[in-house]
Structures are given as structure tokens and as C-alpha cells.
Image (cartoon, rainbow, N blue to C red):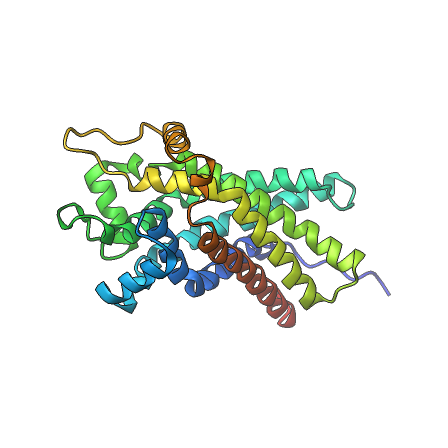
Length: 298
């Protein structure tokens, strides 16, 4: 009998990592959105997690926790689609160049850095819309933008500030995404190898353990950059039209001078609680999507 012919490449194998990545990120966002909202409010100086939760429930109702969900989903559909898809492609190419051998950690980190930068460039407009929608209720009534959804926010930003304003704060967004994805993607792949090959864990325990490690490193690496990014994206001009920061470096230096290095880790417990479960659920959803696809022959 002759050898079985390989399946034709087609389009699906190429787009599959992107589709799976975006879908897993969007599912995770639906669960994490309330915690993300609390994290943003803490970074904007609204108090502790308990204070923010009580104030939001009292003044805005339960629906406030899901304000910006449309922007969050749009962000995952762009950012996570691009970063997870490109990471898979980059690591596959690197493995081919490495004669099929597992990649060393530094090569995984480089792939993660690159994938993070690609994803951030694609997802920056949706990220800006998300931050503004979440911060809107903290502004005085006269300064509120009152966006109704993500697409309305994007339309208003372009109409009022120009197309390039969609990438306002893109510099710190890209740097933050590079740090987060270096921690998230490289540590996950490395942990999968360790739990499966060295400890002999089963698939479920491997995914759970590796995703937990991935979530911790993603949070630890990215929070300082996330703090600066949030401050840049939500800043408003004063009465003279001047912004409080001229750029991300100026924001970082003023923050360091005013509050010391730990100021960058404002809201770290909530941020870690938000980032780690989101990362974990992204990997878990991705694993389940891949298992489902195998079961139906995709």
C-alpha cells in the first residue's frame, strides 16, 4: 500500500491559530470584565477594590461592571487574535529552523516579544476605546465623552481627534504588550514542557499548572507598563490646554518621583487577580477549542 497523501494545506491551517486565539480571548474577557473595570478604577485613584465595588454598585448599578464590554471584545478580536496567531506561526518557523527540536527559553521569549508588538499595533485602537469607556464615569459630567459602544467610541475619536489619535498611547501599549506576552507566552510553553515531560502530569493538570505560571509572569512583567499606559490614555488637558505628561517616559519619571517604584504596582493584587485568571482561561479555552476541532476532524 502506498503512503497516505498529506492533507492539502488550504487556508484553514494558516488562519486557525488566529481564529482560535481570538475566540479564546473573547470568551475569557466575558468572565473577567468586571474585575478589569475595578482594576482601572483603582489605577485612576478611586480607592481600594472594596471601595470601588461599593461605590459602583451604589451609584451606577451592576451594569457598570460591564461598561466597555464591547470594546473589550473588540480588543480581544484584534489584539489576541494577532498575538496568539503570530506567536504560533513564529514558534513553528523557529522549530523548523531548529530541526524540530524544542526551543530554548530565550527564543520563546523573543517570539513572545514579537507577537506582543504585532498584537498591540493591531489592537491599540480598541484598547484606547476600552480605557476611555471604563474611565468615563470617573470624569466630571462636563468632560465625559458618553460613548455608547466601542464602534461609537472609535468613530468619535476619529471625528474629533483624527485617525492617528486611535494610536494615542500606542508606544506604552506596545511596550506593555511585549512585556506581558514575553512573560505569558514563553513561560506557558516552557511550563508545559516541564509539567508534561519532567513531572509526568496529565493534559488537564499540565494546562492548569502551566496557565497559572503563565498568568503570574504576565502580571508581574506588565503592570508597570500598564500603569503608565493607562495614565497616558486617560489624561485630559488643563484649562490652558496642556496635558499632565508629554509622553510615557515623562509619565514614568514623574510617577517615580512622586510615589517611588511601588507606585507602578498600584492595584497589583486586583491586577494579578484579573490578569492571571484571564490568561489561565484563555489557555484553557484555547485547549478546549483545539480538542473540539480534533474531535470533528478540523
